[in-house]
Image (cartoon, helix red, strand yellow):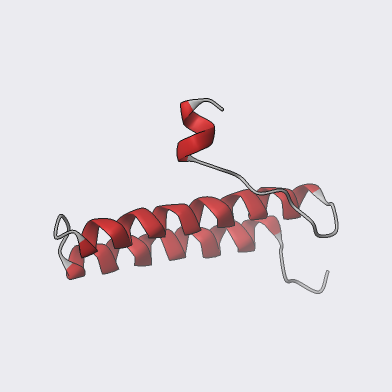
Length: 76
């Protein structure tokens, strides 16, 4: 296992295989991973709660844009 796989593990996708779903799944995993890092930094006192909240909110908006851009959840 190389350093990248250790620091950024990626789980297998088990849903219906479509390119847009695979991309969204990767984006979702990255979101979860980054939120975990931010939460750990905040708990360790390296990041203020306000900064942590703002960063997580920005990541959430980015994930929402990804979902909309990929057409996930639309009835089309």
